[in-house]
Image 1: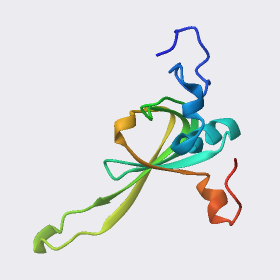
Image 2 (image 1 turned 120 degrees about the vertical axis):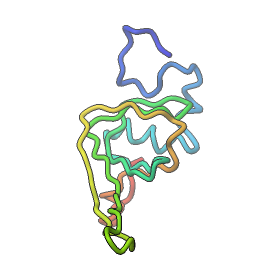
Image 3 (image 1 turned 60 degrees about the horizontal axis):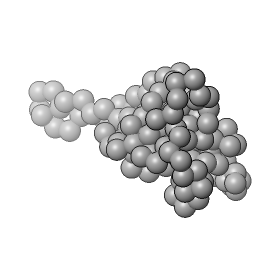
Length: 121
């Protein structure tokens, strides 16, 4: 981890190998930090997280801002024990630290991709 007085908006948390955190799979996160664009993150508890990446490290720990967390809850069947209705839920979190071992998938700029625009590089 970096020194406590350092700027938290840096691209990584002081891992020493900055170039490795700008290319390959990390290029999605690097471009998201550089372009201040949103990413959609699929996490292990089947929640989806939409937010802006402010910092990341080699373990895929993410510092996020303006986060919308989305998930689906299923109600119990009631008397007949059949499958209940699916209810989509969400919540807003202003700042979030997401531990890297829960990250499954990161997609850059999902709104622009849905509108047919190319992802920012």
